[in-house]
Image (cartoon, rainbow over all chains, first blue to last red):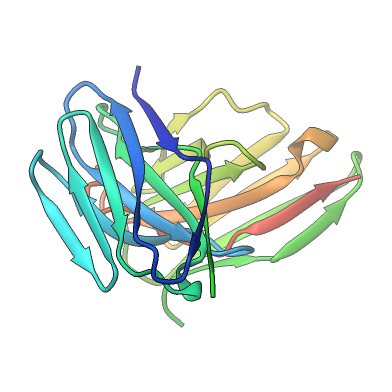
Length: 111
Length: 114
């Protein structure tokens, strides 16, 4: 059964303090791993898609990496505006296009 | 208007009421989805529509009834809900039923059942 687990559940950082979020996954044949950002009261906003082990994507202070078992979202020198819940999802191995989500990591960056 | 639009943003309903949630996408996507988001739990897939045909119903109680009249519109009809159905209901769309391009989400409808 496809499964996604994110850790930690919550993370508090000081502004400028770099860290990483983890997404461990179990899926029969990875077809895509996705990172989303969700602000309170809003829908998730797409950040990255990774398709194969060794792939990396960057956007401003965020960098996503992928291995055969997990993905990391590295946050370099975060700012308070990076505070949000970060969601990881994998594309289900079937053919209906459904995404299986982890429970998310809520990041708080203090000035 | 572009993106995925959901209405209403907030809804309070009694357990005997009937209401509908609406989702509209202006992205030309072929697939649309309903997800339920409860506190401290992962997003739960409810329904998948591809080219206006329901391709997945993820064991959702019959008090939730989806409708997809065309590829741009998706509804979720609600009746005789329970308090545990209170949650954020999210609509999403993707370019094709395979989901390989990821989803575009709406802002959600915050539902409270009293």
